[in-house]
Image (cartoon, rainbow over all chains, first blue to last red; front, side):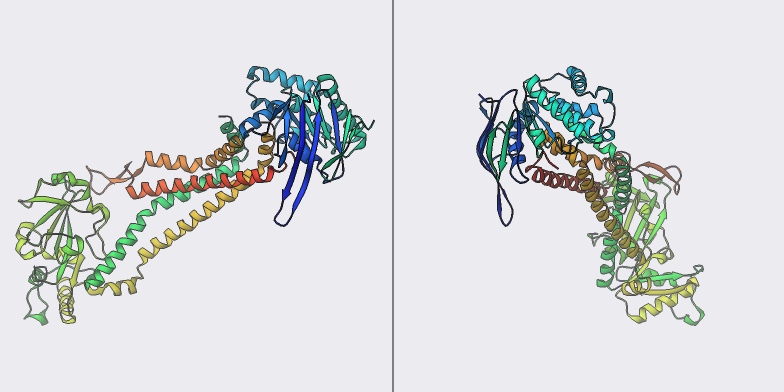
Amino acid sequence: MSLISASGVSKNYKTKDYTVAALKETSLNVEKGEAVAVIGPSGSGKSTLLNIIGLIIKPDSGSVTFDGESTSGFGDKRLSAFRNANFGYITQDFALLDGETVYTNIRLPLIYNKSIKRSEHKKRIFDAAERMGISDKLTRRVSRLSGGERQRVAIARAIVCDQPIILADEPTGSLDAENRDSVVNTLVSLAHDNGSAVIIVTHDLSVAERCDRVIRMKDGTTMITGSEK
Amino acid sequence: MKTLFQAIRDLFRELGFVLLYGLLAAIVLSSFINSVSGIKRILSTAKYVSQFKNGSVDMVILEGMGSYKNVEPSEREDAVPIDAFLREGLSKDGRLGGSAVVRNGGADGFDNVIIVVGRMVDIALDGVPEDRQVYAAVSHDLSAMIGTSAKINGNEFPIEAAVPKDITVGTLYNRTQSTDTKRALFLFVRDYESASAKLGISPQQFLMKLVVVGADEEYKSELIGRISGATGMHTRIWSADDYLQLTGDSGTKYLKLKLAFYAAASFALIAAMIMNLSRIIDAHENDYRVNRLFGATKAQTFLRMLWLAIGFNMIPAIYIVIKVMLPLGWVSRDDRPGEFVRAIVPYSPEKAAVMAAGLAVLFGTAAAVAVIEFLGFERKYSKEIGRR
């Protein structure tokens, strides 16, 4: 059974004058320990697919299941708790709290997580920071860090609750080549060494080819699935 | 609690604006509340003006230095003396009315005895019985004395009522100060002639607050001549229209201007609050987005915005609550009449209502801003919360 599965999902964005079909009955299954890249031109529906899988937006039709459990009937409270416990989000703009320290940023998912005791927070934050090589920067404000360091903070935050699914939307879009390789290595190792399911939306083929599987999207549908290696 | 602490942190990041707005709001609200009494004065003046106009009441105005002398001008030897003229005018069928404040020094619990005579009785108070020679009432603050009696000039008067708090016993240009109408005994006398012995007050004492009702020009001329002759003071008679035309009713105009200013300032304050709150919430939008992404529910996000909006108004709210709990004002000293001390003076129901309304408007507007901002936030990020 797939860890996360989107089946036949469609999403339309309606404006006053017209409707844009962002996704057309698209399906995607991702297993534990698998790193999957989603590539395609702008407007092909990559981010919409990622947001639907990440339970951020609801599809107009189709369903998303997690470990066989359908999420379609979840209310906002349950969805929020589910997102918190199971998903780590990494975005191109890092989505960090700019005025806060590295420590506070990594702690963010923990303050909404009811199953992790408060006494464990410090250790988890330190462990996640150490894995990302930023444990010496915990008291620094994230606004004073480089792009690569900021993305490592975002990744530390995405794994601090042991979230089994990492969703990365253009995670290397703002990074130089060196930092890009480092971030991709980290994400792939999270899949292979931790058993996480990692989905990376990217334009960058060099990032995609490091993943176990590549999904190519065009006009709201998955065109090719399989390894591009 | 989590969202409350987050909102407090958000507020501390905006401390400069919070303090600036808070102090301005406290000043404007406080001034607005304090000027509410002006509304009553404006209304009371308007009522007085219409009462004077409808009843053809004219005011007798004495100007300059002079002394009262009960003698006749040499050219008017055929006329009755001024005292007799005033007595007749203040009698039951006369055309004059007046009031006088006699200092009582706190004796029997009254700082002042206010005597209202002749045609002034019906201008000052509705419902004074026609058949009563002397109708005694106490000021609003002494209403507990109703049913007892008061002894003045050796005569005992049963206290039958308490006058309204905002009673005015004067003319448009010469109104009794509010302090005079506190801790006071009011004696209403339609027929001065019949009660003058009981009152022990000469008619000259009504000259400073004298009105003439329904008089023709001949009577007015005679009145001016007699008073001028007897007092040596320049005497004029003004109708309510003359008064408005000549004075421009500057006191009421000033109050109206003051109220308009505070009303405009209050609107500006609300506008500033709306704009500032929107700006602050927008500035924290990224925080809300990231928190939503990592587990904050819609309710938590809304509460965080709401706490922020409410917290933004805490300084004026605390200021008003302190003012309600500790309403300091100036009151006259019991032991030394005429001197004033700072003391706790409970707010009038009108001021308390304005305070409550002010707070309701502030918090209501703040809550509305939070609701609108939250709906905008959800609309914006329900599509792609993961992206800016």
